[in-house]
Image (cartoon, rainbow over all chains, first blue to last red; front, side, top):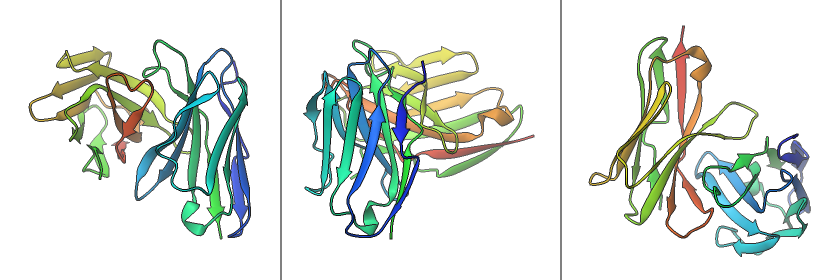
Length: 115
Length: 113
């Protein structure tokens, strides 16, 4: 298996632009997580899905952030409009029950820079 | 407010010696703890975990110790190898929270040959 696939790997954009990050989880996994890593806050959970349904989005910072999972093999994280403080590395991870906690496999991340 | 704290941003150890990475937590409801390892330009990978019903779990060179009364856990790597150089994240979960992991900020370990 190719593992969790994220695209793009790097994104540079200007403040106010829309940014869309993409994730393809590992086939057969029924959980999908979006994390953000910054120097100040470390690794934070933004939102996670189970069977394509959002379960907990309490980590989503603002209404500018939205995430969707239209099917079991694809998810997006969108920031509109983007701001410089959104600059971070965004990770997607997937997992499967019942070993959800031990089996979170992370993608390589998308490094976002908002100018 | 950080519920999982790794107070040492970095640690440097000589090859062959023991590396001890520390983690403190504040939420007494946490009942499962994990360590992840992260190399540059890669996502974190699961390393070892421990349930709150145990105080020690060992896997090869890696051992995690849990002190519930002190709300403290530590990861021991013996012997340390240059390939262990990475950022180590401590994470915790509350029972019934499904996959919701709370991570610390990480400790960068450098193992010098």
